[in-house]
Image (cartoon, rainbow, N blue to C red; front, side, top):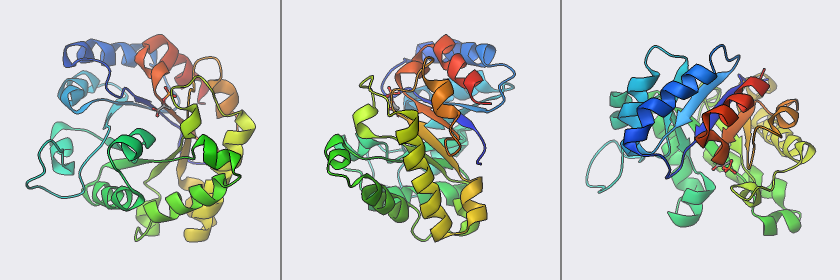
Length: 250
Ligand code: PEP
């Protein structure tokens, strides 16, 4: 399936002063990784993260970007700013940003297009709430989020997008989707992408699972056919735990 990518999402954790040593440690404990290793860091940590990742296999990602090139958007960060620092990846539409910062399917689409236009690799998050799962509308919701995120994106560009399936009820709660539940939705996403583009393109797109993935459950989740990696919150803050997940992604 898609290229295996294990990406940490530090969220609003880690200080700029802790970043250099931590990225160096991640590089050391994940040496020889058979997958892409990414650390997504807060904006203020990115310069140090990039400096530490230089000449290592670790890639650095941001946790957000603005969809405009520049202008009067106080507090925001543009794709060019991230590129200027040497950032490769950017998380878009994380459920925390959708929930607390009014991110919508429309802004997710605009941001995804901007990232692709500029040459950043977008990690686009989709996922259902517990109420939506219990109402039996998980796949309908995921289909809407996925189709809207990819609206107006060519097949060539779509292949560069990473999709992260993150059930909201599993994020930071210690409740992981079972490997079968995660596989079912990740396969559903691949089928949607095959309908939008082609089976060949859908196979090339990396689909990650995220939601309390950790050193104990990663191997089972990552053994599933349509799960090509993980977006890791809590467990990405401890280098040794993160390394176990990386090693599980063969
Ligand atoms: C996330 O924030 O993307 C995430 C999956 O967090 P956690 O691993 O802590 O559930």
